[in-house]
Length: 350
Ligand SMILES: [Zn+2]
Ligand SMILES: [Zn+2]
Ligand SMILES: [Zn+2]
Image (cartoon, rainbow, N blue to C red):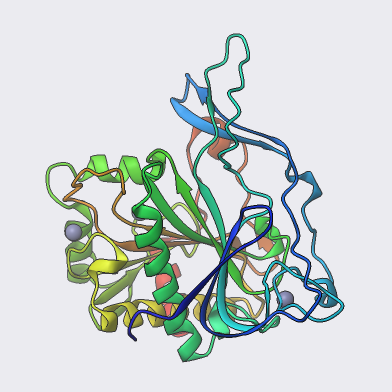
């Protein structure tokens, strides 16, 4: 797929909407929703040496609306949504309930290191069809979605205030999703977040992803997919039951580095993983998907290696894995499955 057509619309409150592929304009009388004022800042935790994003305006978020009130379906004459179009292939818009927002405020609080909020939070609407999920997207929509991710990575990477473009999906109410329409998100952070940062540091003497990939392929027991330039496996050290890492076999740092065919292959492999999850326990699997790519802080990061990580949070039929005392208070995960057995079970579903 060549670069998809993109139409940019700026809402009256300044937020951008990007319509990808084809669309039909919003009905007459469309009224854009607008962002509410709030306290946006980032605060430094000196003990953990990490940033906490404060977004004290998110409580009014739409919570599991009816289909007729869905805020990301196409707009109809009686219902103006976030999307200024009656129908569309895929859409991205700046979140009205963002975790980060450049407000120009310079908040102060004694004893706390506070920086003004900056960065961008976008919502990626995979399709204008309300029902379904990433796993059920039609092939053309899936291909378009990966091109949308690629375009957003490029666009956000070019911003001075963005050091890391994080594409992710939270799927299922159990992961805090407040909206069923198939969608994901992008957080463009003004710093490199701790998880990718730790991974990049671990690879400072040569790419660790490449080495782990070779080890998994040599062993084979935990490998789920090994074709079309991609390898998916349950890492031997998985934190989550049924955790899957999907790694591009070539040492490439980000989506734009992949040829278009490679991006298509990545999308369909990701979808195979999502489908395997849904068939594992016969219910839609709640999961988090994280795409790790090269930081966009202007430095080289030669060890960056594009991959997706899936964290399904169900450990058995009807049983959720919670981040409890050991995980949250000590940073030690307890996984009550063996990666080798999880891989065997998932392989049967692929
Ligand atoms: Zn919808
Ligand atoms: Zn590598
Ligand atoms: Zn990673």
